[in-house]
Amino acid sequence: MKWRCLSGILLLSLLVGCDNPRLHLHIVFKSIDLEVSNNSQAYPLLLDICDRYGPRMAGTEAAACAEELAALLFRSYGYDSVFFQPFTFNQWQRGTARLRIDTAGTFTDFPALALAYTPSGNVSAPIVDAGNGLPNDYTGIDVTGKIVLIHLGLLPDTPPHVRNTHRAQKVSLAIAQGAIGCIAVNPIPGDLPTTGSATLDGGMIKIPAVSISYERGAALRNCLAKRKCTARLFTENSCIPAHARNIVARLEGYEFPQETIVVGAHLDSWDISPGALDNASGAVSVLDIARTFKALNLKTRRSIDFVLFMAEEQGHYGSELYVREARHRNRLDGIRYMFNHDMTVSTYGFNLMGRYESEDLIRETGMIIGRTDSFFTNVIAHFTYLGSDHAPFLMEGISTFTPLCRYETYHTYHTSADTPQYITPEMINSNVRTSAKMIYALANSPVLPATRLNDEQLRQYLIDNQLQEELVILGDWIWN
Ligand SMILES: [Zn+2]
Image (cartoon, rainbow, N blue to C red; front, side, top):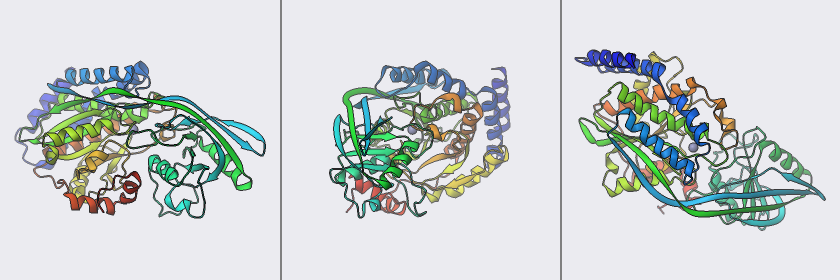
């Protein structure tokens, strides 16, 4: 505490009369480094959230307790403007999933997990291998009335130009092709099935869809190459209306308060693990970035909304609500960036998602960040996808970006192994300090290059970033 006061005073005195913007940033960034290395609460908080609440599936009691804790923490850091955004949504509830494979009269039970929004079902049919489950994979095969086997990633023999899509698009395509069941293979080795939503709009899908481990998937694919296999797929699940709340802490800008940078992360997890990586890592990052701003008494020209979204996993419900509210209040044009933190550890650069107009500013800021941080190598990437809370913002033409992270723990993604044991304080703190610096620079930049795309620009942006096909499959392409 003593050191925090001292560093705050030191910083303020250094900033008075500092006319050189780069020097100013350098001084602030050094203070952020000191604050995070001495006082970060991100890692203990990650342990606390995971151990105390366990899985935080939106709509459950554990999730509601985590929402309360987040609001309490924001207030304890010194935020006066902390509020909930409550909403109701269609919560999927996991029941039983059984998968039995019949290979020439030999029956084997495969450990399987239902993908979320799988209905109750009981189907039995021959299995057809549809490779990666992308549109081209269905050329020359007929899956009508069959159970389709798809890889959730890209198989090793996939040509390099092929782009992977979200599991929801793959399941949606399998249904459109006439499959009556779907077996989705975890693309990451580790002998565990994976979960995740099989829909992006939160309604029950039409067929049972389960996941199996990478290893089981490889064995089944080998088997199918030699002989016919049949699967019996039994699932029992339900949906109920449930309640959840986003938590927002607002830091008011002193010069352009109507302009906002949204810094978001989802606080919810799946039901099968406490979601240490997905997404306690992002949630505690946002909380500790917010804490750091108050601890150092950092002032910004623009406003910052620190937001913990709920029900991302079940269909981006919280972020969609935030965007709807902003539209209702005529605030969408004022949102200059949405900076999303979903599985954010070991940050070494930024993914600008095809919004090239910000590249110079982010790269120049990154160069200053790199001066005091040997881990951060200022890599700029442009990889665009729709599977997280930035998507509702992106679809409104708002510039979205994310930290670029090194995934030492990615094998735990959406499995029962997503526990804190694979995460270290340094992995989390690297994201907290780097992202805090970038947010500070953007919120104080005299001008920001990114503005909201108009309808035609957005259409072109989605085409240029290869999102059109995915949106068409999902029925969300609004242009002809
Ligand atoms: Zn996530």
